[in-house]
Image (cartoon, rainbow, N blue to C red; front, side, top):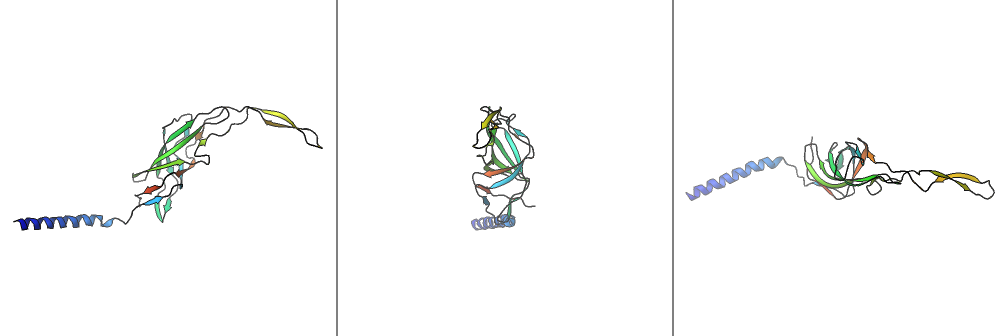
Length: 191
C-alpha cells in the first residue's frame, strides 16, 4: 500500500511540475536593465506648477515625450507617467524671484506597472527652478571720463532691486528629469 501511495504521489508531483513548467516556457530571458545615474529623460508638465499655488509636498505629474532605448530595448516608452512632489519652495523677496525644487519618486508604465526611482527636474543651477535676480528698481546717471574725449553720461543700475515674482512652469512645458541614482527597469511594455 505504501508503494502505491508513494508512486501516486511521485506521479502527481511530476505531472504538476510539467504543467507549471509549460506555463513559464513563454517568458523571455530577461534580468532587467539598469539606467545609469545622471541620465536625462525628456518630459512635459501635465499641469501648471506655480510657487504661488503649490506648497512643499504638493504632488506633480509629468509625461515622457520620447521612447528611451537602452541596449536595443525600449525601457521607458513614450507617454510613461512620472510622479513626484515639490521638495523645496522659496518665496519671492526683494531682488530675487521665487524658486522651487521638484523631486521625482516613481514612474508608471502604460500597463500600470510602477517602478520607484530617484530623480529631479533638471536645471543647470542645481535643479533649482527660478530664483533669478530681479531688475533694478531704478537707474542712475553716471558720468564717464575718457582721456581726449568729451564727458559722456550713461545709466547704471541703482542700489535697489524690484520685488521678486512667483515662478511658474506652464502646462506642456518641455523639461528634463535627471536620475540621481541608477534606475533598475525589471519590466518592459511590449506591444
